[in-house]
Length: 162
Image (cartoon, rainbow, N blue to C red):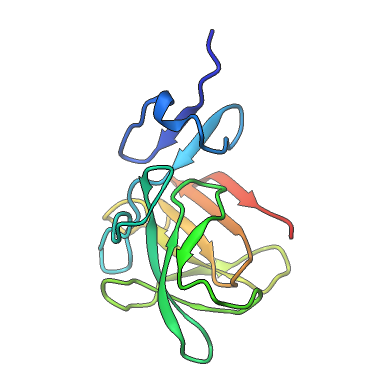
């Protein structure tokens, strides 16, 4: 028996050797999102050249209430809070999340059930753009709370207390 990290990824495979430095979700399994679609069907994984642990980033256009905006590159590794790009945003700021390809707002999924006032927005896992296959991301900067939903079931929930 060996203790190499297993990677559960959506629509692509990585070997355990390629994934040893990834943070485990549980029991040595790490979820890596390999495609994520905006509201117009554009794949936002690999939209830029930014990479995390050699995996292409998920890119979202973020707008602050005062109208500043820029590209934010999120780690595709579930539970990894690393991000690059437009990150000069005060924690607790409610942001507008947009598709960087179309500038359309990410679709609202509903309120986060933790009392924070945050709202989930969708990045879809398939080109069918179904909320039953989505990453639900929070619109509050620094509120590290996301859900990964596949086949209408929450397969992953991750939250970090600050």
